[in-house]
Length: 255
Image (cartoon, rainbow, N blue to C red; front, side, top):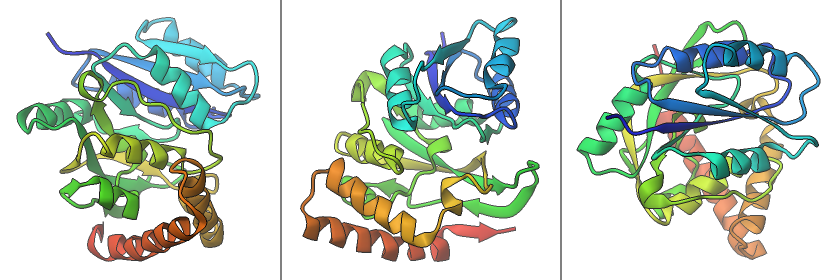
């Protein structure tokens, strides 16, 4: 029997993309999953769209935050309620290829891996592929994870039976990176070098924020989540800048 996968999806005013995200989960060749969608006080039709899927699919779990708590706390809430052995992450504007779960679980079981990520491609607001595939190092150790956030959030999976419950710190940005660092203290993160997901670039996505804001948020993440002193936080942020350039050169490919 297939082990249950718990899919963690925070959502806020996601009416434009959430249906496509859910459909990509329903299309998985690996069907034993639950999708925990935490609606962070949306003011659009997000809840109505999710409800339309729930009517015919009990695997979709809807959780509503009565006040806006942010994506870090929303993920924490979903993680606390997750029942699966496998924990996977999928934001409400991204999509998976149909064989994503099946291929990644096979890879982890066959390689005795408890924490993994995959390659992914980029799409635009209309779901058109941008001709870019992003990968990373084959194995990311704790030290390497501190140096740079190699995994795309939509590709990460870990084995909760080995890692246990992980809770992130309430950060404005980079909260998922802080979680990856925590997990990397318990297990190396292994790459399945196959393009199995689609990351959406649009004006609201993290990758579209200004470069200087990203630097500031990285610094704050090391200060608050990792509780590093000012000097260490600055050095780790500089490392992230350097390895960000390396990632673009070595692991970002066009087709």
